[in-house]
Image 1 (cartoon, rainbow, N blue to C red):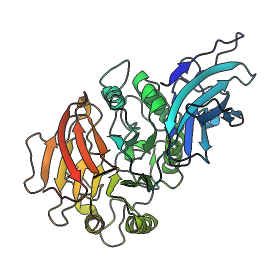
Image 2 (tube, rainbow, N blue to C red):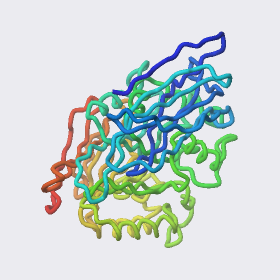
Image 3 (tube, one colour):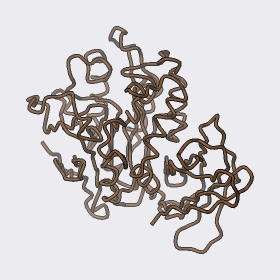
Length: 435
């Protein structure tokens, strides 16, 4: 199992730590990004040096190593090492090493990961998905969000966060400048349960409005001194998300995911609706249409930071389930519903649901917030006839489990409470449709 190894300092110099742990990010069948941040013992950024070492698990082969790289305060003492040329479907040992600028040994974090299998290989998988985690609404004041311990117990293959990770615009600390925005990330990701989870589970992050500036933001806006472009840059810095934010993940023969971006390419919410008004933007649309048409995966999951089906509240104006983006919303629902065994998983809404669009029959699963304290926005008994198949105004997370992949693959999509209890489950055989 992964472990933390603290090495004693040899002088009075401030020892180098990595109190925000590591993130094993953007894993594929041949590459991975290893994220870390050098800190002092209190978790604040400290200039130092880092090196990443890796080798196949279960061997005594010599370690492959990156060069020692210096971290600086300008980048919040963060380093992202991209490891390439890895073998598919293979387990690897990992060491992330730190030292002071004078060469004094610091903390080392040990972990393991397994690359994705080839697209011809039947492979079981457990995916966990979370959303909307406000620091002030964490359900354990000392350790963080309970769902991270619960999700870890499922031994997930990988994790997707759908956005609203840090909430720059929620008091008492407001992310109105670069320093405060980074502090929002440090607070959440220095907490023990989040550190342990990300040291062990490969992750992919989507961003939403609260991770860039403020509620319902779009390009060109500012929040205090913080610009939209700075918000995007900090998100990439803190999560190892790629420069092109939309991407697809293929896991073996049977599962493919599409991770959408809903912020960088959007029109202003206040623009009159019509063919020119967009959330996805032209290039993302072309990519989505092309990659969906090319996919031979048995099951397809489109993961969106915001709803595509809804229903949403009448006073909302920010997503494709709202009237303000009715033209593009209808177009996207028609596109997605034309592909067999495809479902949408969305973030943003602070309640869990399963809904079906009456016209296209596209099915959408809302993840819900990371804690019960953060659940809000929908009446518990307000079940929309003809759309809702399930509704729960409470915190938790989702899991997607692909099993029996070697024979007849099936997909279980589950809503969980924060303690892991399964609150709703749907099983999708590969050749059968549920009502």
